[in-house]
Image (cartoon, rainbow, N blue to C red; front, side, top):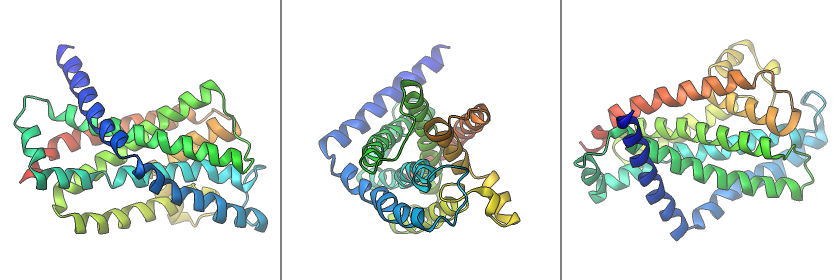
Length: 257
C-alpha cells in the first residue's frame, strides 16, 4: 500500500509539472482545436445533409460528436511520445531515470497530463457543439463520465506512444508511425459510421479497437442515454490502459539508450 501511495504521489508531481508547461504555452490547445472544429463544422454538416448513414434515430451531428471528441483526444495522446524523445535529446529524461521515482509513476504522470489536455479539448468541442445547436446530454453525471473516459483513453494512447518512442528513437520516424497508427484506428472504429455497415473483416478490427470503446461509452453518456454497454466499455478501457502502462513502464528506460 505504501508503495502504491508513493507511485500515485510521484505521478501527481509529474502530471503537475506537465500541466504547468501547458499553462505557460496554451497555444497548443488552440492549434489542436482546429481539426475537430473542421470535422464537425464541415464534414459533419455536409454528411448530415446527405442522410446516407444510418444513425439509429440520431442526427448525424449528434452521432459524430463523440467520435470527433475521441479522435481529438487520441491525436493529442498518440504524439505525446514526441515529448519523450525531446526530453531524451535535452538530457531531461536521463535525470528522471536516475531518481528513485518508480518508472510506473513517470508513466502515470504522463498519462494524467495527457488526460488534462484531452479534457481541455472536450470543453472546446462541447462549446462548438452548443454553437452548432447539437443536442447533448450535459448533466453532472455525463460530464464526470466524459472526464473518466477521456482520461482512460488518453492514458492508453499515451502509453502506446511511449512504447513507440522507446523503439523508433527519432522524431521523424515517430511522426510517420504515429500517422500510420492513428488514421487506421480512427476509420476502423465506430467514430463516423456504425460498425454494422462495415465489411465483416473491418467489424472484427473495430471490435478489438480501444478507440471504438471510447466512442461507444461517450455516445451512451452524451447522446443516447443507453448505459447497457457502458460497464463493458469502461472495464475494457481500464484493463487496456493499466496493461499498457505496465508495458510502458518496462520500456520507458530504453528511450534513453
